[in-house]
Length: 410
Image 1 (cartoon, rainbow, N blue to C red):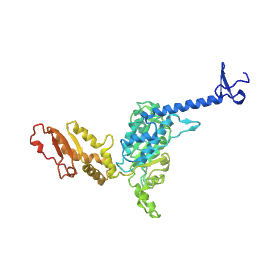
Image 2 (spheres, rainbow, N blue to C red):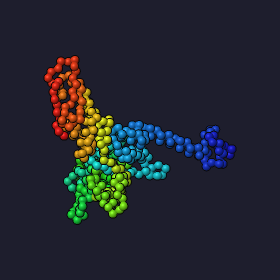
Image 3 (cartoon, rainbow, N blue to C red):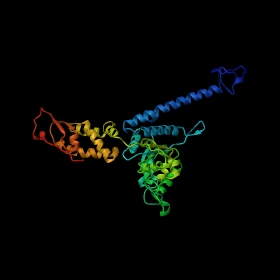
Image 4 (cartoon, rainbow, N blue to C red):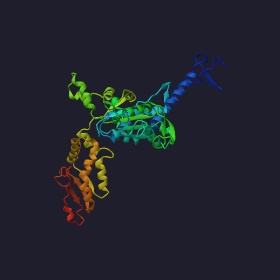
């Protein structure tokens, strides 16, 4: 090769580079090859980012989507959005530039009805990897009556149409995780097969291991088992952890912190969960802890009206199918939210309250001819007044026009 040969891209001489590649009269040096490779790699990553999760390419967009279904709980939604985004990057490139990308499982903690399960169900609508929801209350230690922990992976396998490659890149939400907390005194009273025993059984699948999973049902000598690697499976755990706040308060009695607002803002730590009954090895495999706050009156009002599948919107659609426009007065909506707040049932209790309020109308109104509009008033919700009914004046009316419809007291 001629000593005066140069790189046709950067002009570097053959003596100043490690390697010069030549084809006919065209040459390129190793540095330009590395640069071109880097450009192509960045373009490939950018393209994958654009195609990621139905166009939801960044955590901010994932959170904005969740905002359409879950009211409030911004911090929890941010934590989940980042976890889902990183999960997609990790399953595409488990190792990048010599760095192995490990998963970060998530713990969602919040009172009943605060939106933990709804967050999981909303995620299932947007992600393009297998997603499964399991309930920890049915799990027991292997060999006892109940479901083995491997049944969680069986659900994931089923969600992927038994495609093992897809299933090993999926996401699992385990609800009611607080129900497997270690029972007080279990160390001296025998085996805690549905508490600490389940935690220990979950350790291997949370961290990542090769597990034999039955294709159908529970493990048995005759069942067909599949070797399942959980290293790339993301686990999201959720639980109410009733009484955790009271246990936290004990740590303040001997200290100087007395401001209630500061207590409320204090984050939940792994030590708090260990004191509740989760073993340290279990907590160590779930590094991200996101706290969901108790819903306020304003949150409950927004939940009734704003989400894409809002409860009031569902009733409006049902009445519209009967040719009747259903309207809820603002005072009535606020009273319904206040009822749920007083009962301490959170968003989950809103449906029961609305169902009870709407039962008399749902029974009577379909039989009324020419009804065009129904307005739910505060008095109707309280059970001391009637709903406002509007009929088509052009049509001949009968005595049903003056019908009084009272609600049951809720």
